[in-house]
Amino acid sequence: TIGLPITKSLFLEETLDGISKQTFEDFELIIRNNAETQALKQEIKEICIPWLKYPNVTYLESEVQVPIAENFNEIVKVARGEYFTMLSDDDVMHPDFLNEFNSLAEAFPQVNVFHCRIRTIDEHSSVTEYGWVGPRFETLPDFLFHHLSGTRGTNLSNFVVKTAELQ
Image 1: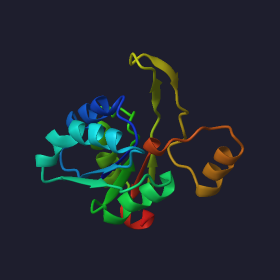
Image 2: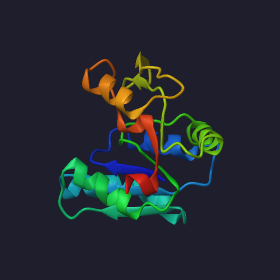
Image 3: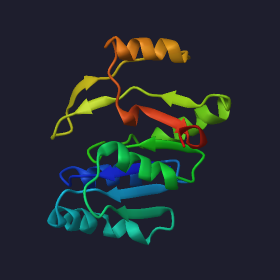
Image 4: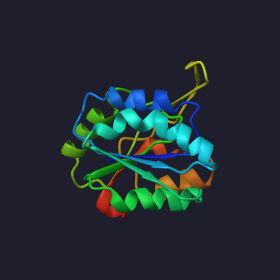
């Protein structure tokens, strides 16, 4: 499952385009429009309309804008895929993102959380920085130490998690 909580429209078409180019096609997409104003909500919905015809896409809309954690939790509640990842409305997935994680999940079925390196891009799609490269395997205490000590940044889109564990 790919969760996509949306609050803005600026890069949304690029985000959806990246999802459409996935080489692994057996996925569920949950779009949750959480825009602040009705005008922006409508603008986002217009961008999403072409996606609503696909059976693997669920479109949800909050009546009023809710905090990010609540929005995230509403998406996780309805996720049906065995694994879950969350994108922001300005993230662009590499075409092999889901395929690579599927291969890892098959190779390591006992692992609940997978992590990847990310590239940060600007509005012109130029790379501005690279995320950290983690070890092949890391314990939870080690991960937490590095995260809490500030030696590594973390984004939601860095992770793929077993949905049942997340729920």
